[in-house]
Length: 370
Image 1 (tube, rainbow, N blue to C red):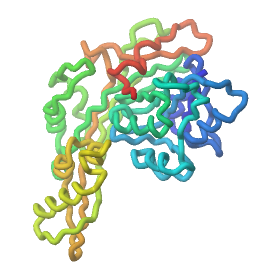
Image 2: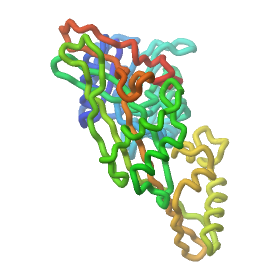
Image 3: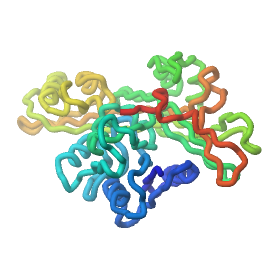
Image 4: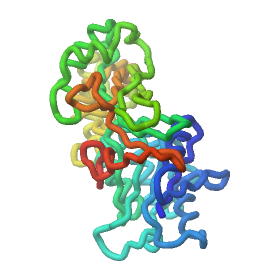
């Protein structure tokens, strides 16, 4: 038997629970006042006599992002979401440990055979984060996570459709914010983004994906019917999510610098960060990579900086905007109107067959696995 834990209280968490309720050989453990963390979930499985050991696989459902952060609490007292640094805390303090007991998953010798499948958007985009999560879990369980936006559509008459969406992302310094829709379209097209089969995205697709009705200064979200073919009762489409997200973010740090011009201050900032462990290229997951940049220099140049000096102390406040276009993943042969790529989990007693082989955790197109 596989066991799942989805402690969130929003609509997406509810949708994930509905999907897992229709997944064969899966029991969802409900969150309670004394069971809200992954640590408590693992302990419940390990200490409940009525749960036969070893269990099958574990599943966790929560929001996540493409910067290596999942929004589920690992241990009591944790502040904020789960990042690389939080996983380090779980490894360095015994009371914070989330290691899965070997007897719970039947581990006797490598390689591990049990899996922890994470269900949440984009968590698989940062492989170093998943490697650290695997280590924190005891290193004796395989870990998988989606490489894309995770979307779920529920029809009470038939069941649940699980699909994915591209999360095309551009990040720009605040001073280079988009001011027009054509400017946004041109920038996304110029970024050489591709479909899941590696083919280039036609320029005209962006005219549909970033419509004239979008305001490039704020986020927009709308539903798009996507073709699912036949055999699902009266449904031939599923409602999918399309978005244009606008997310301003900042980065703040104080350094020592006596420079008076901003160019030198920026150079001093880069030199200071280069000496910090989390920004060094030798780190397993440098902070600049966590924030979406390939190098320290591209990180520094990716922000608009405001410098405020107080003696030799220099306050550095960087601002940027992350633009994200969320597009349902369809058959790449027709990325605008082709059939949605999905799994389907029918309601109990339904005569409609399930479709569970399209999005498989072993498929590197859709999931990262460590």
